[in-house]
Length: 144
Image 1 (cartoon, rainbow, N blue to C red):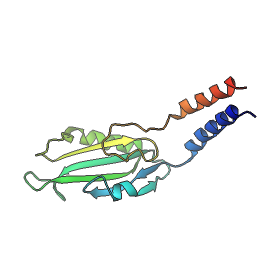
Image 2 (image 1 turned 180 degrees about the vertical axis):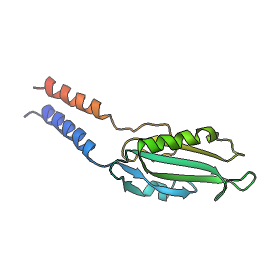
Image 3 (image 1 turned 180 degrees about the horizontal axis):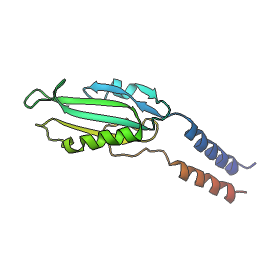
């Protein structure tokens, strides 16, 4: 077997192994910044939890109130896509980023450890499974 065919089979194998493994997300609750615990604590999600959820709040805790000292509160966890979308829809009217008001935003992402950054807008950096499979098939056909 030549080298390129071997590489193609390895890519194909990696793509299928990737779909069998459980999702991993960063997890933390009500941390004052996206550091320390929020960047070092990783959880393997339960079956059915298919997205990582990040919530960021600006305000005073435990009860948000106008005029009180404000700070960021970052929470990250595993979630289902449905729950994540519901939370995102609930927060959308309050996701203003106005410094003198209390606000809350959330983000859902798919892919291992995709919630490293908060409200990044970036998608998972890994190639989607379809692209990996098509690339492997192309390499196999090209070099056989």
